[in-house]
Image (tube, rainbow, N blue to C red):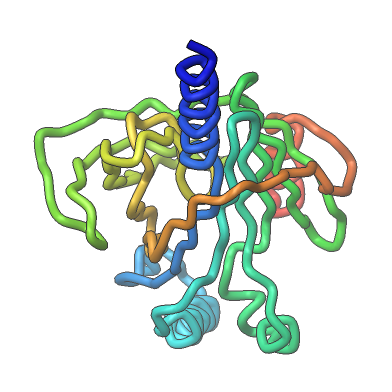
Length: 235
């Protein structure tokens, strides 16, 4: 009887450890640039149009390599999405310009993002509790080694201009998370495209992670941040 009880305790401990490991780990994402997404025909200044095109070409070249660019850490309580820092990337200012340098801390229980952003030399921590509204389609495809389902959402920027976000998620990895601040689907986001940016999954490692909120900056709401952007660019 004692041996049976001891065996049950050991099995419960093993199962608990396995469950804990599968609910914590790191997801690595790449970043690639698609077709030029901005309609420059409405921009009268030919110089501005030329600069935008040159910046796009440079960004696409920098992100043409299939490498880990971002890391998403997750556990039962939080997730943290941020760019992967290397000596080469830190020494390359053009690379820093090409990627998303914001840090996304997510409280999974409260469903609130705290995003560290830099706006014209000032660092802010932007609190954002907006939930994305997804339309899950019947379209499926194999993406990066996973059977995925397509979902779409509408994103409105600070000026109210709406653009389409296309996501591919997999129910085989039951994490309602994804790159940047995209989440809320019934499975991990394997690939997501918005404008000319595409984030795609490269690998997953299940391991214990301790996530700390080390972001720095002035805390403001997403509404306050949007007003700052509008004021800065003269909208």
